[in-house]
Image (cartoon, rainbow, N blue to C red; front, side):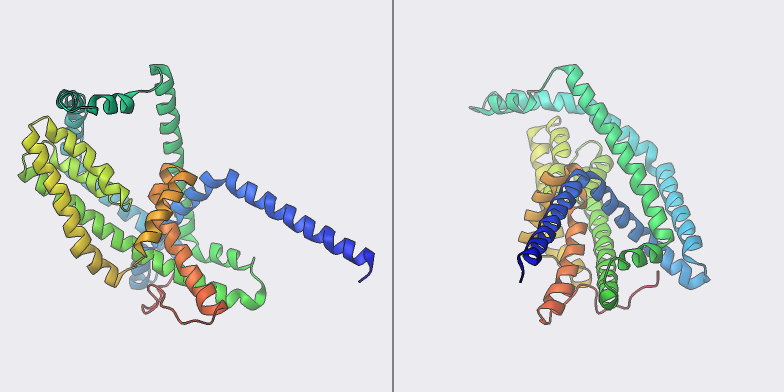
Length: 347
């Protein structure tokens, strides 16, 4: 090897390393956008889960079936709002009125416990009112922007899934495109199974929590059940976050009501963890619990609140791709892939 050749190789490696650093920096700078893209993919999978049966039964194309799926989703949301919207809105208003009183009740009880008052004071310490309002307005603006980006992005993805799938495959060397295509299909199928299982779990938890809190005499059980069902979408941390409003509201009635509310939350989680989750995971997607927990914490640190919401679907996709491309193909080791035994759905 001549000195000139060695110098050229060194420069080429240096440029590759610099390009890798730049790509990592760009990915880090756009991490909020990446998590929004993941949210759009998840919602697009949900829309295709509705659109694919419509397409098979009517013979309509992907765009027409997606339009019908969007329309059906809007009709379902509108019907739910018409049937339950007034009651839920009234109960959320009741919760908003009760919460300050429940916090005062909690402080009065905490004064009887050593060090408890100082803990509550540390939790409520914050900046001045203008700073807090500016932060809340910024968060609300970011949430609204992310919501519309996810909604419209999901419609575009669901209407032309082949276009974006083939576009990704164009980045892969021709000899490996077939393998990459199968891996993408496996990841999409697993994501659909996870999403269906998650929706079943959320509905079950919301229904059981609402009924349990109603029997325990806690005010606004429908709204609190809805909160519990929605926060169930965040594994491990969600049930804890979803129980706080119910416990605070129950505390305004009496400490005994709060105790019964705690029993309801714990009982629902035991039913969900020991009955629903094993049953759903047997048919859907099962992830290693420790891996899921640590990844959720990492996603929250990397991506913020949206990272907590979409941490698990990101893990589902990564889990399938690693098993399909690395363990099975690169290491030539047999391993099961979630949803592989099911027939792939048309898209």
